[in-house]
Length: 239
Ligand SMILES: C[S@@+](CC[C@H](N)C(=O)[O-])C[C@H]1O[C@@H](n2cnc3c(N)ncnc32)[C@H](O)[C@@H]1O
Image (cartoon, rainbow, N blue to C red; front, side, top):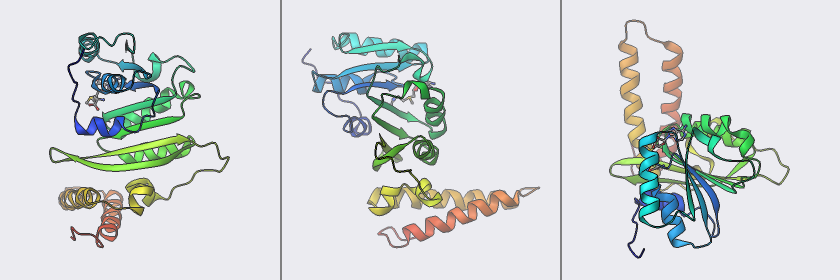
């Protein structure tokens, strides 16, 4: 099929972290645009498109059949990593969902990850939850990006299985902002955290006005606000 598939820039940025000849699963694949795009670009790649919901699963099958990719992209219905057999994949993609759900999918499917050298995630929110899972489970964060699409900010977090024997550690601040993102702050990083700061200020005001203010939570958010101020005050989008 010569017709080109044009996934979103967000998905293309995620796909760019797969090596040539990838043998991977895309969990929560929806229309299977990512695995189809990768397999159309690389005839040596092999993919599993996993979906827990029947509607998106059928959409994935449709895309795969439309582009005659059934010999390269295997569409499977099931929850998280339950669709994968042990040792079957070398890379894993989980994109376009909350960090807490990504964390749960990784944690529940841990036994399927022994052969997985690279995990590429794109949490829409709660990226901290993904970093926390990676550091606890010996995946070293080797790349991070903040991207903006249609007014939303997304993070991409890539972890490689740590074979050095060294214990991985991240500070609370690194877990929140990203260890690599902190070292090399992009325009999108400043814009994202400026937006987060405004949201957080609003939440704190609302919480203080509540009939029963939750003081612990308020002080946690205030410390987070202070961290954000510290990290973006050197930037182009000064608060
Ligand atoms: C918003 S879509 C993201 C689709 C695509 N990955 C992307 O980034 O554009 C999230 C998809 O994840 C699927 N999903 C949610 N929880 C899942 C789980 N536990 N296992 C597999 N798929 C899941 C949903 O059915 C939905 O199709």
